[in-house]
Length: 346
Image 1 (cartoon, rainbow, N blue to C red):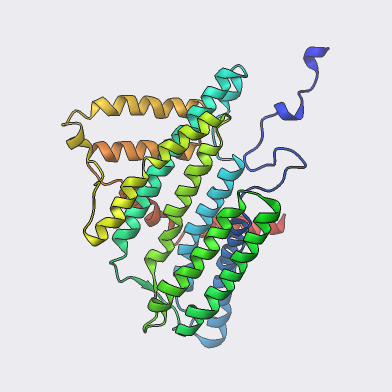
Image 2: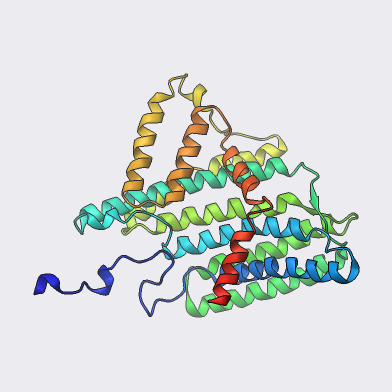
């Protein structure tokens, strides 16, 4: 009867998003979780407020629909960040079929390395898109905000919260708290030196490229966490090394704004002298192998997109650019809104 005994809870495959055990603590930083809650609430409140205001005044809230569409991008990326933190991305579980020990660890290291590399390239591509879109004049409707509020009040609030997070980190010593702390201080600096200048000047529109900030930041964090998912220290350092190899290209892209680019991104056909098959086949085999060994599905799909665009001589920024175009469509916000409605009704 031993063969018919129920498997232990640790041996049962988990549903994506479910906790590993009844006592599992939440992963990801508190800033990510609360920001996700705030964004979802904003997506619920804006259409509701639009309906109420239109009913009594005959005109809706300026830009309510457009803001809801753009907030869908943030919901998707914040959810992806939390899924990466808990290792609950959609993926095959074939790695569990391998013998435990060296074989299984090697497969997980390989998947973590591919995840770190692909997400690192996506972070660079998103940064390229962001910097290119800075020159656009597209803005979203927003009432003019007093300059003193953005220069003083908002930075003081965010800095105070950041200092509180530093004190909490000193006591608890949890590395995940550093991400939220950094975001709070970065938000304070952004409000003081960027937002105050742009929003306090009429017409006071919100630049559309601001919503794209979550893309390079999100992919960079996912790259770090993807490498951290490796089961051994050497595997984690391998993933981080692959991700750090992208940093010089990103720094060069920022320096290019001031005419000091030192490491332009290579062009596939030029680099390979037209022999694109030299990279196409090995790259495809590696990506497909990582898929079979448990790499997240989105990493494999994005990896193939990056590979094919690169071999065609198309800038890799086209991948996050197309992602942004699809996500801010008028129909996509219905998905998270219906999900919230179903969760409440259930």
